[in-house]
Image (cartoon, rainbow, N blue to C red; front, side):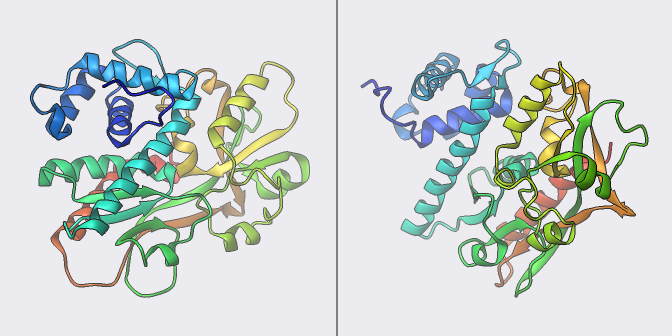
Length: 322
């Protein structure tokens, strides 16, 4: 039976979308999906054509394209990036509900959407190791804090927090500013200049509140700090054809990484801008850790810790390094 385009995409359709987003083409996505397809689809391989039909239905439901580019190298559109966050949350919630419904040993990991750059590869590595999903990932809203989440999840990615359990360092993120190329020849932006001479647009998702206050960014650009960084990047690039008006996008290096030149969402006109560290004698930084809820040793938990650490170390640019 065909599904009405008025019905929101279900868990499987979200999985299809995420497979295309990861593999960037329908054929490889279909190959990856075949071993995990629902029972009613197991009598035949999950074909490329079915992937295409599913993506088309989701796009009709969303009302606009989610991918751009040719079939061999698809890229997410801005709307596609928005749907990606929702799709990961849908899949994660279903995984958590299954865990609540029956004790299947599923370990839960919570993180912010921009942590997907290393959490998603870690999850794929765990799937390859165990042959089935053993870790459910939930992508949190930007204002959620670590301590309460450790009551619901086994593992949480975030800034250092007090309390029981282990805290495994992953990387040091730094505060960066997206500025027109050639404006700052020394490759850095003093915090004093940022606050006094320019118009900062802070998108500080994941940065601890005490750091934001210590840096003097509390209340600066009110209303934008938890906004859509992808939208801000696109707006500034679009406006860059005219005279620069002093607007400076400020974001942590891990959240900024996907939008830099050469990265997945670098996109058009990325080379018109550079990301420079914001400094106050030294670069402004904060630590990102993997927090582990207190408990006994568990092979899956230890494997998840190792996979997340390895995936984060494979991306040194999370810390803002060129």
